[in-house]
Image (cartoon, rainbow, N blue to C red; front, side, top):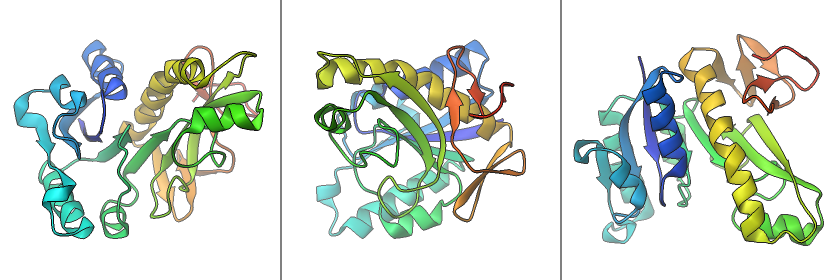
Length: 223
């Protein structure tokens, strides 16, 4: 069974979605550790104590020192996949290269639009009519890795950042689970700067449909 390590800085709603999918039998995997840069993060409370690791980056002499300790702790649980879900600290180049090809992130925007923070407010300020979430492979450049799949939501008149964030969160969970199903089934891989699904290059991100399945934008059959 595939092993998943989670990185989280906050409440861990995506982590809980993964735990629920595992418990229901719809995601054949196990969470082998939850790692945080916030010792008080609520996400840590969602798993038993022996699966938790946290440290305050300020207690380390350098960013590289924290990243090395985090990387050693993750490597110790031998994960097949490492998922950043609400992990708000930028990962250093050495850390990313150490786990390259099995490091995923979920980001609350339709990348490449709105990398970084405050994505919902920026979307509204731009006057966009559509917003959403993306799952991508992590590379050293922030939120710039190849996008695997996206889920889209409308921006309604009168939306503020909070209402839009809530609508995006509703699709984040099924999007992440759908991508992880591909990953743990051995169907997903990073090939240089490209994504391969079932050994074939993916030129356009997959889209999450209303049934929670991933589809190619130009094909009707779900993966």
